[in-house]
Length: 111
Image (cartoon, rainbow, N blue to C red; front, side):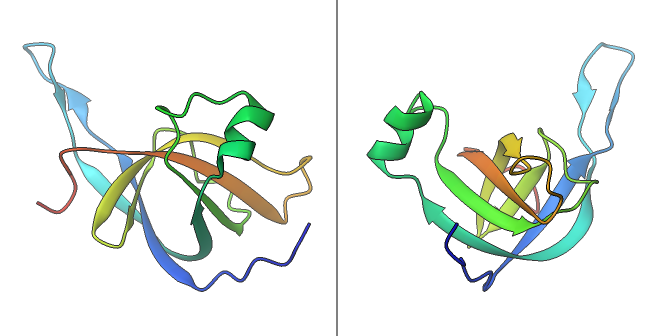
């Protein structure tokens, strides 16, 4: 694997919300912290190679392995909000993790 430079600062949030008496989810986004990551759009070749639906995945982030980061967490990057769609821990080596995300519109965190 090429050495992708993790020079982009991202912030990751998890939802600590609860279900209210009406059965509605009350979101409460809590920051897990800020992380350095490599980021880029996925190529069409990658979509075909991995069998991904181009409407599901918007971007790829590569960052150091962090056990606390989970699918359904959200990322803020360049004033945009992304939901983590899937995580690849690269053969469970616990060094890097590929985080595939989809764009959240409208943005819900920090507005």
